[in-house]
Image (cartoon, rainbow, N blue to C red; front, side, top):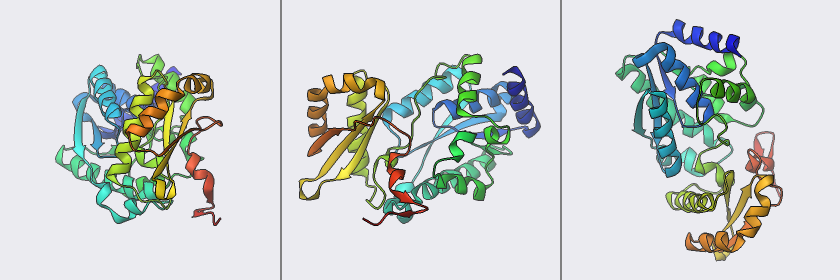
Length: 276
């Protein structure tokens, strides 16, 4: 692990300065921590604030950046105003990341930095991730991919340098909870974020609220938790259901398969929606 850490430090040293697209997750937090260690004030973490970022994720990002000691800038992001993003086709992430990287490019020049980097690791290359295409188009460097870092490598590296989020569960923007072909709206994002926060407050750690249309009745919440937490979620079913109703869901269900990454991608055949 020391050798891999030294390789990453050397890469940042060669860069001279970097803007880190920083969400507060373990991957981008690790990249920011190493960049700050090597570059000091010449490494700046940038977090995009929009309706798709859960409030608890924003606060967590601020806390971790403070722990690291890095300069951390919050900027407004307006992907919700992009028609391609709102339409929520299978390339939604491309439009979201394009907005992020457009902002990052402007801020990089404004802050006098030379590179924009992200926290993508090699395990991210397996699932359908159109956001990776946006990074390539924008010339953003995926330093962990360049050096062959897996998710497990990142967690071990983060633990080795003392990051408190080394074991933080994977996360994604709230828009990823809405099925492809269903429009992303501020109201739906608020529903999802509010219910997720309440379920987390019950002590469950790995939580996804998947939003589904339910005809004239409104919407259904399909809640995923880790398989280990399924018994606890079932025990808390009355509280979870009540919370779902408060946030406007007509139906509240628990997914018995448990949490898995990109479950909405299960409907994709190639790069198009399955016809049913």
